[in-house]
Length: 92
Image (cartoon, rainbow, N blue to C red; front, top):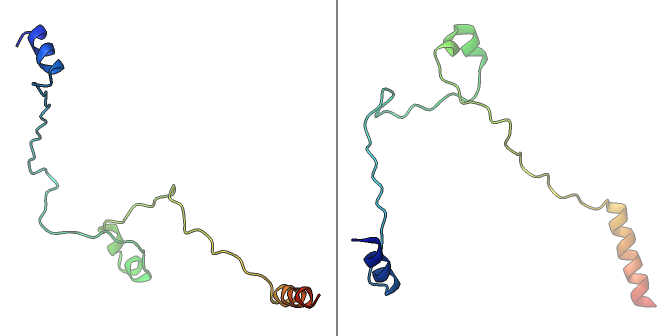
């Protein structure tokens, strides 16, 4: 369609332009049907036998955040003090 006719049809909402994307998927050189889980820990047995040289290890993520620290608690003596204070305030 010429640009003028296409703009007129779009203005009347009689034309809808859609962009289609397609991908080609092929088997690469590292394709495998078996799922290999990388090792996460180096054990003394791996070091003694030398098997760690052939094993794939999971890379470390140094930018990840750890678990947030658990919230703190009041000291037991502070708890008792606040309870006693509340009792005396209720008594007047």
